[in-house]
Image (cartoon, rainbow, N blue to C red; front, side, top):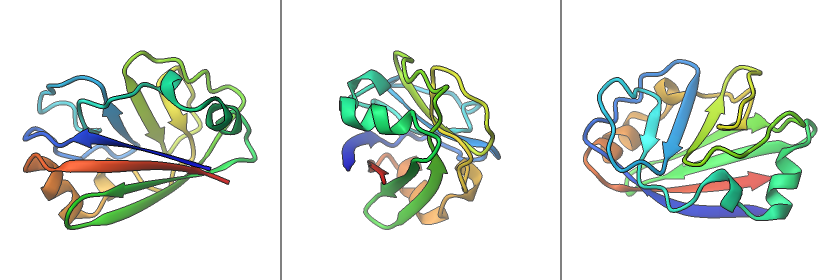
Length: 137
């Protein structure tokens, strides 16, 4: 099953964080927000379909996040976990670590913000939109 939504790029996207990447409902970010790769998300974790949320709460679930701009596509793989509450009111974070909190969408991701394709990051920095697709198996 999969779910897609569109977020906006922003001139302050640096995509330098080494352990996470994030999309947020916030409309503006500062340069220190080096994990944020998209702003003005139309949805929060609780808005995801119930079936998808239930699947994400299993540690056996492989989660793939496809990120797509005009000039690049990147794919990130990670896992769900029963400890994921998926209840943060504005942020979705994918983590390389096993850390879980209300903002965490997946753990043990194979990429962080710094690992994303530079063409994708360039598109985001220039304000282009990003299609985010969450795929669970």
